[in-house]
Image 1 (tube, rainbow, N blue to C red):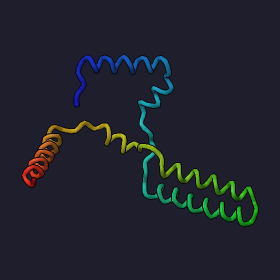
Image 2: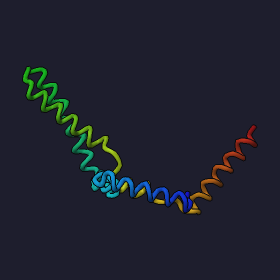
Image 3: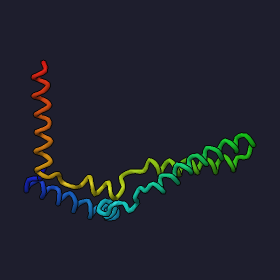
Image 4: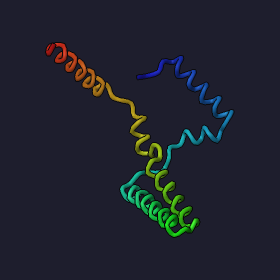
Length: 121
């Protein structure tokens, strides 16, 4: 949905105010993350979680706290990579504006479903 002129002006004013108040945050929000999820990265993160669990259990069984702490660090690191936020490619997909064709076909599909539902009852 396109913004009106008034809304665009308000948004520009808000962006300018943010840039003057906190330029570091504004620059962070402008540039997307460069991390991209690849199967290799996901595999390494999952392997890190599994190695962390094994190391944590080994540390508990052998009563070696440094080994358990190392395992915990591996688990947290792997989980943070697996559960990390939006990727650069996902951010680009999310910011694309839908075309009129997609909106029309989506709305037509909803209308057809509504008509079928009403005809069934």
